Length: 178
Ligand code: FEO
Image (tube, rainbow, N blue to C red):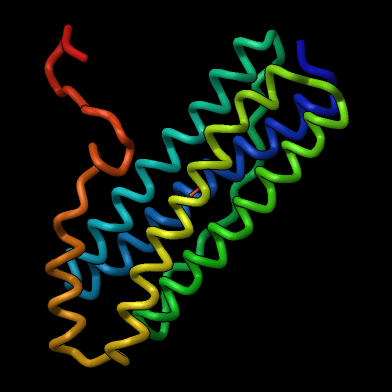
């Protein structure tokens, strides 16, 4: 059973994860428009991960006998000056998600809410991976300094990122499987 305060905080975070999906889907469209399909693929995988994160919160809130409440999502930014600017924005965003997860964990500890504390442990570890994954791309893009042919090579590399690997699960498209 969640306290009212905990349920409100978890619902707000669920909306933030849905907003992250929206944010990365908009970045995907930006890269597609630029013809950078590898960068767009990276954003697509990222967006899918955010949807999975949001739905984990949804499931936990509902299973904890609290009401799932959706918040407002603002229009996302859809234009960036450079590839580096876009990826630095992703890093900043992920750092803000990490801060929020840690604040939720502090609240769970304060309330002696062991179930929520346990639930959040997966997200604490996930955020370490999320920041490392985008940090790697930021470092590569920063290194090549917007050199077009080097960016093309990175774009080709990022085209290999798969949704299955991103989610850490195998996704079946056939009914009755998975
Ligand atoms: Fe769900 Fe990328 O944090």
